[in-house]
Length: 193
Image 1 (cartoon, one colour):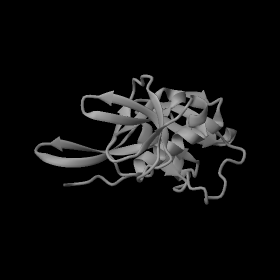
Image 2 (cartoon, rainbow, N blue to C red):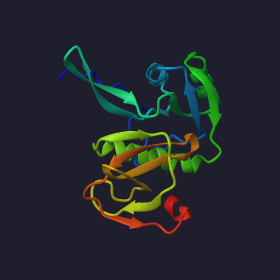
Image 3 (cartoon, rainbow, N blue to C red):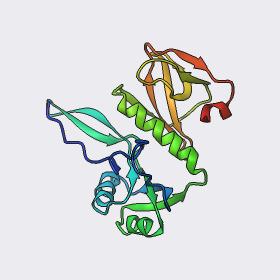
């Protein structure tokens, strides 16, 4: 199966690694709403300019002319998360890939949400984007490769899905649960800690 090489989905590569020198100094998260299909182009330009960003991507298989291809596509089409100071933000806007910039009022919450999305992607489990997030039971995974992640459970015909939300853009990512041990969380405030 031909595989299209994965492009950088964040800069610096270890953006969410606690051992990485703090890139937060003087920077804030911004959500960039991009022109259609411009997320990767913007990511390439930000990488070249050494501007911190995060573009969550997942592998998707497509059949074209009886050949199967695997491409890495944005999990949240149209959105790129920029960690920038004023000058870096301006460089991002000068790319002409951005339609609108959204300031993030709760920086810590977005760090938390994006860290959970990154961990979900790194687990290697098949992930689906969630655009219509319905209220559900708040849970924490207690065992397995996703231990410690907190999110919601959605029930569907195929089984239970564990959903990690990025509240700011009202989107999320889900994985079908299998052998994970879950524990209920009492309230939403506990889900953030």
